[in-house]
Image (cartoon, rainbow, N blue to C red; front, top):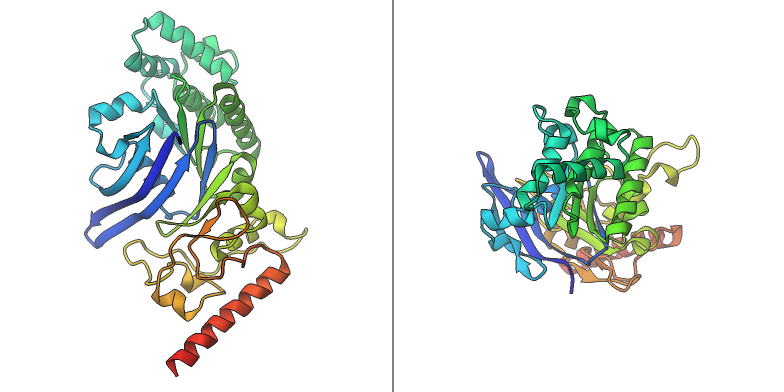
Length: 348
């Protein structure tokens, strides 16, 4: 049985300009000790989907289910969710400076987190806070425990957030762009820390990022999102070596290491759509080099494709059109051309 099972999650917000459909039917599962990577461009619905699961999207219209150890998080009351957040499910946010209260010492905030869920003395909680800061690599933790957040560097604040998230040994850790504001050296240290702590405590991890390099380093399975929907879902190796969806192909092709030294960086043409006005049909078709007439009129469902034990893609290309080699790309182009020709013949 999976630790977390999300089924057909929809999240929308009412705005003066209309209804913003931030998440449009996503389904995934996370097993104990597993890392699921959720990747996509900004505005694809990655963060909203996970924040909704733990009750952090106030005012949203929500449907679907999110069962954590068999209990639906979406039907829990706020008081019930408070017993789950922190103790069972912890989160690391993108900007620790906005997550740590500037008026309170770092150690005090960790102590309060512990005592909110466990009946322990301040002395015992403080001792654990010092141990946690040392565990995540804060130097001289017995002294730095009394520092304010502004006295920590960016990397140290992120480590402090990880210490707070792990204070109660949660079963699931949601890391929402945890290294975006950090330099590459500190990024590598933070990712190595999460992997080490995951191995020691057996914590399941949901890693939300736009960086496919991070996903390659840490994830077991990956869900690619675009315009509030999953575009592709499979294991990490299959995603990188046998992708099916053209959007996944574009993301992989935009990685710097895909070109030789001095080669220009590739990018996906165009921009993601507004979630107030998502295009009819496949939401990616205005930017897709393989788009057929069918793509503009009919939205493809998630369906099983070849290349993995559980490899699903929301694309009208045939299931066998997987991979990134030149032969496969040519085959995709030919399949798309045939699809456009067939549609023209039917309309003639």
